[in-house]
Each structure stands twice: as structure tokens, then as C-alpha cells.
Image 1 (cartoon, rainbow, N blue to C red):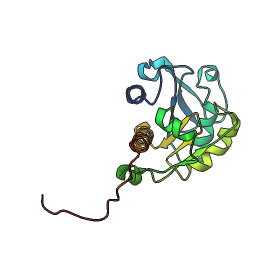
Image 2 (cartoon, one colour):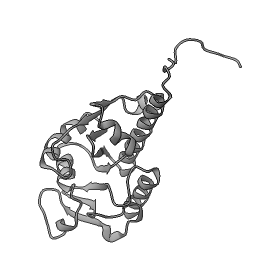
Image 3 (cartoon, rainbow, N blue to C red):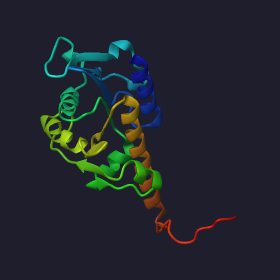
Image 4 (cartoon, rainbow, N blue to C red):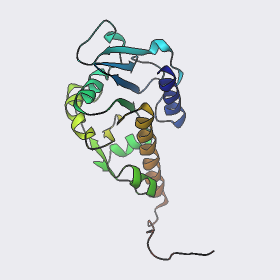
Length: 196
């Protein structure tokens, strides 16, 4: 399990969707969950950075768990997710400040994630409001943006939740770059060439 956390944590940082000490990840194991330590460096995890605690109640390790542990618990208790990646993707976070949803304009983005809701809260980091509202969205969507804060992605494996996180950031980069070009988006329909 540690190798999965370590690899995904490193990939999140290398892709630039987390800063040095941001984001968190977890997996559910029956009535327990394993979550990254509060303030850990996801790209440089140690085994001691993985905190196991109860899904329903606290134990002696809870003080070390990520501040988002309540949100993770709520998602696990109210969805079929077995893994969660919470990240702070820069382009997606920027778009979340000016849009109520993110609609992919590229083919791969449209295929993988048809629509990404953006949800606003008065308090975002580890709040009870986020824990109460987010699971209903994650029953329908693979990933959701919390306005100005970051993304929460679910999957059966950490790798799957990471895929949605990575895809979201690529979608948002394409949207941003396309807008900076100030050009009209060309439709895929029209002329088709069988031979070059």
C-alpha cells in the first residue's frame, strides 16, 4: 500500500497539481481508512505519513490525520469509493473562481469527464459543510471542484482517482490556453480526408 501512496503522491507533485505540502489521499479498508498525515509532503512520503483510523470514530492516531479526514469519512460512508485524491490543481482552481462548472472542450476530456461541477462554500478546508454536501455530487461525478480550494476525486484505486485529477488539470490547461489564443474553436465536423 505504501508504494501506491508514494508513487501517486510523487506524480501529483511532478504534474504540478500540488505544492510541497498540499493535498491528501486516502483508501478505505472495511471500517478503517488510511489517510496521509496532516502537513505531509506527498511527493516524499514516509511510511509514518500514512495514518490509519476508524471510518466511524476517532482513535489515538486521529490527531495526526489530514485536516480533511472528516470529508474523506463522509465520502466513504455515502458513496462506493474506495480511494480519494484531494489536490490543488492550479488551472482548475483558477477556473473554479470564475465558473460554476467546467466543461471540457477537448476530445479526451469530453470522453473522460463530461462535466465537472464547481461547488462554493463559506469555509472550505475540512469543513462540516463540505463533508455534508460533497458526497451527493461524488455519487454522480468522478471528480468535483471546491471553488478556490481544490478537487476531490474518487475511485476504486488511488490510481483511478489520480487519473481523474490529472485529466481535470489537462482539461483546464486546454481551456485556458485556448482562451488566450482568442481564436474561434474549430468544429471536428466538416471535411474528412482519407488520403494525404
